[in-house]
Image 1 (cartoon, rainbow, N blue to C red):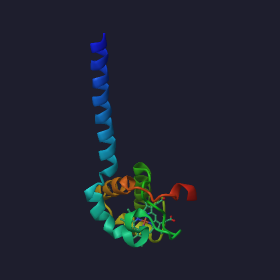
Image 2 (image 1 turned 90 degrees about the vertical axis):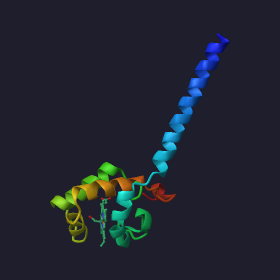
Image 3 (image 1 turned 30 degrees about the vertical axis):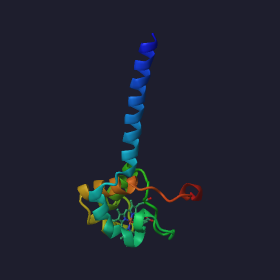
Image 4 (image 1 turned 60 degrees about the vertical axis):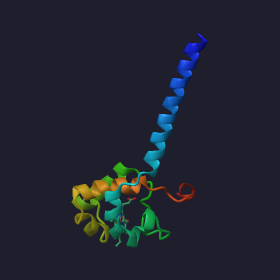
Length: 116
Ligand code: HEC
């Protein structure tokens, strides 16, 4: 019986380690394709997807599906903004997916949640 408990707890530790490692790498993995394409967004949305200018929404840590939807809407014309619409129209579907993945992987600056 004692041996069985040891085997089970050892298996549990391995599983825990594997889960922790996966969570760590998910957080530190910033998609490279999106990082390069995001250079053209820095002027308005800031380095790291955040700016203190309230006219430019924070993108860092935003839900990827939300970001993708907004860019698709700007591109299709169902959401219009004189500045953002031309930007989105210049993006391919692949650019939009890469950019959404990139900005959603960024850590929002501490305290942002409290501001909103
Ligand atoms: C010249 C300035 C400018 C540039 C460059 C720019 N944006 Fe924007 N973006 C804006 C403004 C202004 C808004 C807010 C539009 C509104 O109020 O409807 C916006 C809104 C957005 C939104 C919607 C956010 C939300 O919360 O609804 C997304 C997503 C976005 N931009 C992504 C990008 C990406 C990705 C790039 C680079 C490819 C980019 N933007 C480049 C000015 C810019």
